[in-house]
Image (cartoon, rainbow, N blue to C red; front, side, top):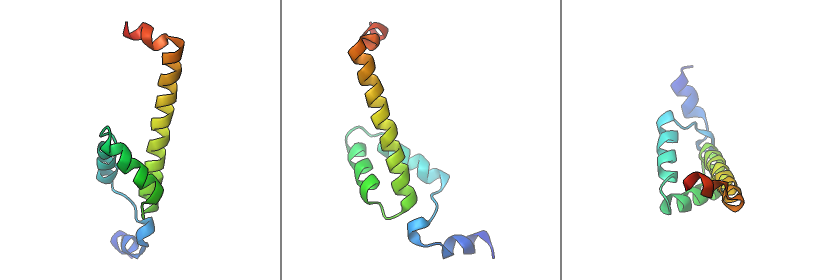
Length: 83
């Protein structure tokens, strides 16, 4: 059985994403407003579990960056770096 036969026998919910797929999802999710909306929709209801998990992990990183930036801004560290 070849690799293509194995991939075709996998249900659509579990089909792997190519490297270029991950690359384009990152580009799509990094668009300021539209990307965030698409990110939330993909994290909640993507049919492919790999896409859904990738969107959830990207969302978690986004939330962590916002929390760290908020802490730095609240403590004045970010203002000191910028000014």
